[in-house]
Every structure is written in C-alpha cells, then in structure tokens.
Length: 269
Image (cartoon, rainbow, N blue to C red):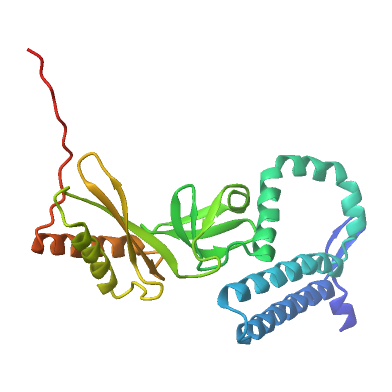
C-alpha cells in the first residue's frame, strides 16, 4: 500500500509529485470546504448581528482561510515556497507594477469589508447613480440600479470617489417634492393640500410628519416644497410620482392652478 501511495506521478528536477500528496491535497480541500460551511452556518445563526455584517465577517474569514490554504496546499504538494519566491522576485515586481489598479481594488475591497462604509442591501449614490448593493467581493462590488440593471463597480471607485449612503445609519430617509401654483392661489389651502395628500400615501411615515415650506416667489408662480420621510428609498421616485398625481387631482378639485411660465414682451414701433 505504501509503495502504491508513494508512486511518482510527475517529476521535474527536484520536484516529485506523488499520489499520496495528491490524496492529501484532496482531503485538505474537503476539510477547508467543511470548515467554511461550519463557519457560515455559525455566523448566520448569530441573532445580534444583522445580515450585512454577517456577510462582511464571513467574507473576511473566507478570504483569509483561502489564502492560507493556498500556501498550505503548495506545501502539501512538496513545493518549496521560499525557493519559488526568491527565484521569481524580479517577476513579481514587474507583475506588481503592471497590476497596480488590480491591487488597489483588492485593498479597497478589504477596507469595505472591515470598515463597512457600505454593506449589502444598502442604498448608495455614486456618480449620480442610485443603486442597491447586492454583493461585495474582494475586487468588485455588484449593484442593482433603479432600472433593474446589474453593474459591477471596481472597489477603488467606491473608496476614492464621493459616495452617498442613503441607509448608512437609518433606513428612514427624507425626500422632497416641489410644486408651483398661481399667484392668485390661497397659500394656506395649498399648504394644507400638499401635507394631506402626502400623508395619505401608505409608505409615508407619520413620524416625523410631512411638512410644507413656502420656498420663494417665482417669476410666474408661488413655489412650495413638501418634505416627507419613507423607508422605500430605492423605489422612492415611483412614490413621488403617485403623490404628485394625488396633489394634482386635489388641486383640480379645489381650483388651484399650476401656471405656465409667463413672459412680457415689449415691442417698439
């Protein structure tokens, strides 16, 4: 049996790959896979940790174990890592210079997982693009836009550019709808309609309550803004549209008009 296990499969110079080494490597891979499975189940059972933090913790542990496993696996096969690294030092320097952006993405991925400025299922805005974080990997982050398109972003873009996290501390966020009415309108009535129609929407929060602000005297209209809070951050544009429709219908019933832009032209003979 020993003779069979020590049978040479591949031989180059001082490197001799034996059957026993291959079997040991397979067993080692199965053990690593089992350990990762146990770790994931253990983390998922934690009640006091939210889903996003569980994801980050598991990925950090997984990447650490995988990197360590690669080195151990090479040792099991009989490869001398010190000799390999010493012999390929110049090559590694060249590869490092050529892959600076790639390494930057990897470092940024570690920062995202450890520091957690963004987490899975967070709603973020980067380069005027609002999207939901679906997956954070070591090099890239996958996001879903409001158009239901998946975009893969390099992690360095998320750590080096200005980024707005709509759900960083609280899922409940404030939004605004602007509207202009005719100068002949009853200001008190307009403010009442705006607040009531906004409050009626089922996803608008009662606490804090929506409020209306008389913004300014425009060129051809009195300008108002109604502010409200909602947890539906990702699809809020649909909610705004529904509220605008309700406001418009209420304006029609109460004979509040939304004016067209007006210009006065003086003609000289």
